[in-house]
Length: 464
Ligand code: NAD
Ligand code: UGA
Figure 1 (cartoon, rainbow, N blue to C red):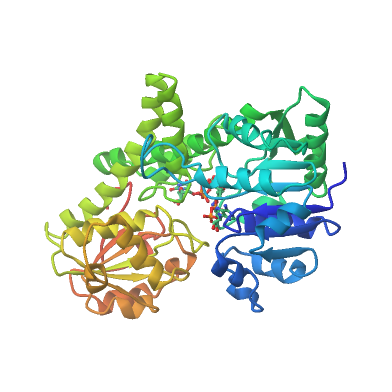
Figure 2 (figure 1 turned 135 degrees about the vertical axis):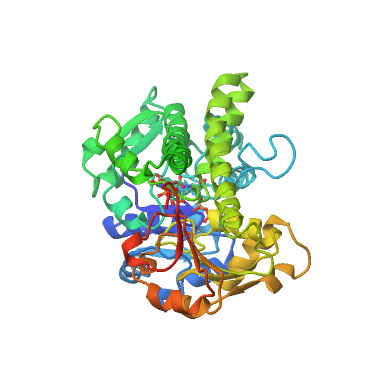
């Protein structure tokens, strides 16, 4: 089966970069990315590639090369579905905010809408691919919808979860650890569909890195991979608190532990807490699924990863207040970094939001600087929490473009995202501008004590 036309529903952090790389690596395949969000599509089509809606190192260059050649962005979802042989569903699957499973289960309403639209529009057979992260057994629901049209059109459903991390999306897509393709391995049609997708990836990924499994293993592997990664962060964060009581240093402990080849060195960086749109939502989803099968111990085990993460964010903010003589009311606190990690403009579930909210509850005045996050996004993140009414967030929080200037007469600075530029900030000038004693809280273990003089310095996971 030779694929000529690919459609991807959802032009977000996954759909956009993934399709850009497929289009670049498969120049003979026409790739159309569609979205119902007109503004997002407008940005993807902006003549100035630097205005594309997602910041990822290397992405603008690829879009410049392939957009208009074999990569297209459109709001005409029906046309793109109709013309394609292969459809990726890459829409959002956030935690439910209502009804059964509220606060735990994944909200599948956008997935179901896509399935119904594909069923309605399709006049020829298609391969439908779950690219979004989904609860195990979602493919059964998709199959039920797609097989109920009665018009003779046949669909093959594959699971092809995405493992890219934001900030390194392009590199992860170009050189993935593995690509996972789950499908109906029992039938000839199922295997053909899997082969068609494997062929697309094989244009640039070595075949031995392309793993094929049954569809349920593929769906569950994605949730499990995120749970394992988040668990490592919560594990080292738990140890960071113990380090602060015992004069051990969490970086030294992480290094010593990570040098064991059975453990490995990655994902052992203590932080103010993991953020991002997926770790929390995917673990909550896993917990929900386990509970729905009455697997109490399994559910409780994974839930602890989230409990630890929430504790880490709270205790970091509480430590700030304690260090500053138990009051931050009316004090000026500069937050450096709002994104959930460096090299992305994504702020979803960023620890900075929760630390700021805690400090605002203590009536601090907050100044925020982030090199890639907009002012509107910062206010929208705080407003979304619903902790304050009216324009209270706008009154208490100022967003600035110059991090050093921001520190004029500040009581404290907190580094909450590990942007490289914070390492090389003119810390001497920052210190000179601040009120004394000048407090500096490093939630990312980014700064070395020898490079910052004079500050009352608090670095997560060690005694200072
Ligand atoms: P996103 O919110 O950035 O993008 C999703 C897009 O889908 C939005 O632009 C939305 O308008 C669009 N959409 C929703 N319903 C639609 C419909 N019916 N028709 C057309 N467009 C529709 O989300 P994302 O970060 O790209 O994540 C998408 C999925 O991929 C999620 O399931 C997520 O868990 C998973 N995932 C995300 C990442 C990541 O790094 N962000 C990595 C791996 C997997
Ligand atoms: C994560 C996974 O790494 C991807 O494989 C997965 O595809 C993606 O989720 C997803 O499903 O959405 P992402 O959230 O983009 O990717 O970024 P990570 O690098 O995993 O970082 C997540 C959070 O953990 C960040 O806040 C980061 O600062 C934090 N982190 C990470 C640490 O605090 N310490 C570490 O050692 C590593």
